[in-house]
Image (cartoon, rainbow over all chains, first blue to last red; front, side, top):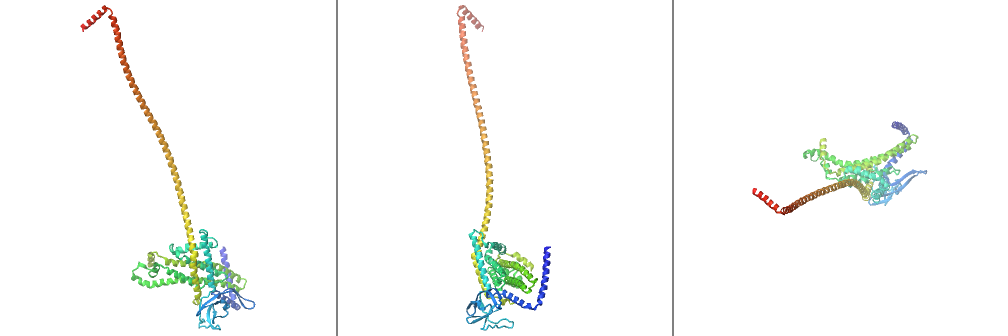
Length: 373
Length: 165
């Protein structure tokens, strides 16, 4: 009964929202605000060269930035290290050793003294992009998370030694999670014998992703796990670990999936199709990991920030509280997603490690496959 | 979507470097000691449970042993008592038999000596009777032969008898 009521209320509210937003669409004056919000969201989703906490326009019409600059490290015929404060939040050119650099759409380009950016037909800049190893906001967050994890888990590990095998203190909260990863992720997928080899990676990757996801939900507004470079790095590590520790059976499964169930001349036509599929599978597995984490976190941030942005567009008694409520609900879901994505990444990594570590004979399995074919 | 354009080599580099470093550091300082401690603890709990179970079983065994010992002791006491009683009975029996035998022997001896005594007595009696009879006969004969008449008479009677024979 109560659930029915809730559903009705939500439907009613949704109708109101669509009505209100339809009404707002007609208002041309709101267009600027929308563009601003869109740009703000896009800016937020990207990495940045300074750690900005907030920015606003003061009464004098100047933009005031709160935050601190970070070091920019470029390789452009020699190492160039300078503070990101030289860019003045992307508003000015930075001059280092006679070279001029300009920020354009979150990237650093080498320009002339006037800061001219040349474009090709598709409006892409053609300026030289120097190799960029800057300590960006994401890198800072990675370092902070790493330090936090190191202190937290080192303290936890020490408390075992000091208390006769029983965890003490704040870290105790994480012990069941560590045990869960061991007992319900690593051991069932990899097996009792070999799981220990992969445990450090699985545990680190789980807590790393989880903590960074949670940091992404704080008002710090960092979007580290929603960055392709970060998820790609994690996925490539999973890929390397899987294939470098792969057993003979693992490779046999890829290059000779049918085994002895068929004579070799019968296998040749099948293998023309099967082997490319299996080989492609090696790469698709980690690729799905990188896209899944990236897309989930990116989408979560876009939805959440859009809903928050709606509050400023509506500016009405119905719309703003409603979008606030929706944003709040999505935030709660995002907290769950933060954990879920960390779990999925760890789980699937463990599954792939399990493939790599398997040594048992699977003749029966292959018989089944042959019948399917 | 310009995903590839957004891909930052720098961030990738730092992420990989820092993450690998983090994995190695945590492996050495956190995960290994932690998992070992947890394993040790679990092993300890398992061992403690096992040994408790073992102690319980031992206790039960001990109790059973005690019960058995008690039973055995009781049976032994019973047996000892029975044996003692048997020995006592046997001794009494033996004593009785011996006594009976002794008594029988005594009686037989007594009878034998009585018999000899009797025989001796009879023999003595016979000799005394004979002596007495001779004495009497002597006396009678002396009396008879004290006067001549009578002597002649006797000789005559005897002669008479002898001729007759």
